[in-house]
Image (cartoon, rainbow, N blue to C red):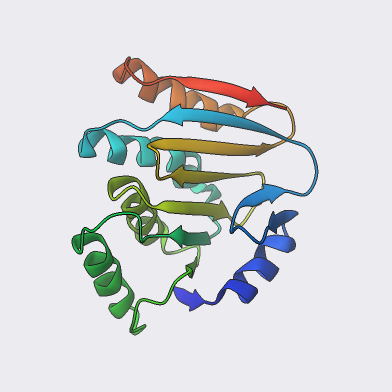
Length: 179
């Protein structure tokens, strides 16, 4: 894992047709589909959703990616930042500057999953951008997850993984917002 500043992360994203605006929101520069999922309340279900989102990456496609916390000052909980700081220290990175972006290599799948899960567990605004640039995920602090997909429809492997998650979690649903 390599910690990077907002400018370096924005350059990394721009190479994948992703734009970061002045409000620290990410979008594809060309048309994309957007899907919304209500974030489960239970932490074990949040972790199951993260696992479902990363499943295509687990099947051999993981080439690395970026986890970016756009906003973490949304709760008074000190546990989340403490965990994130300890995870960063394991890579020799000290401090907790925000916005905080982390570039993960292809051998660091579980590290990327664990770091991204913190956004869902602690209701932060956080993104995961896979290196392949075909889609990205956004945990929104109002208990939502947005999937931005390049093109009209979700990739089949991601869609299958999410269908399995929804079958096991019938109170969760996904809404197609726009193409």
